[in-house]
Length: 130
Image (cartoon, rainbow, N blue to C red):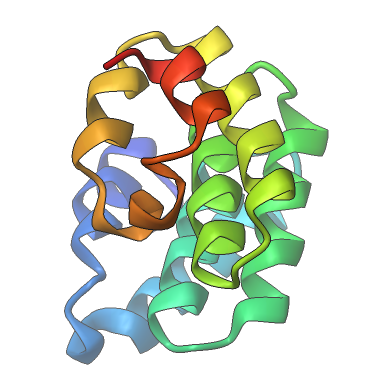
């Protein structure tokens, strides 16, 4: 069933726009069963982002953080989303929390094209290193 975590993990590949409708349906079904399922909120946010539904994506990322404030992925997703909007200060705040929770994200951030606008900033270098 789409509500099982293994199924949701498979649906993480929803970057393929042909899969977005079934992915949205699966994540919503999972959330109907467990509204506090942070990973489903985060993944639904990713699908909404890929569809250009940014307000819905932000809502889902924030819901993921409400369900699990120690989950790094939604902090990271909000960081790159705000960086893409040119909201560097907000982006850096989210990135700081993401790398505190998951130091491995430092290397990801260094290569992430969505964070390119932050790379020359001193605050970014302090967070992720040279």
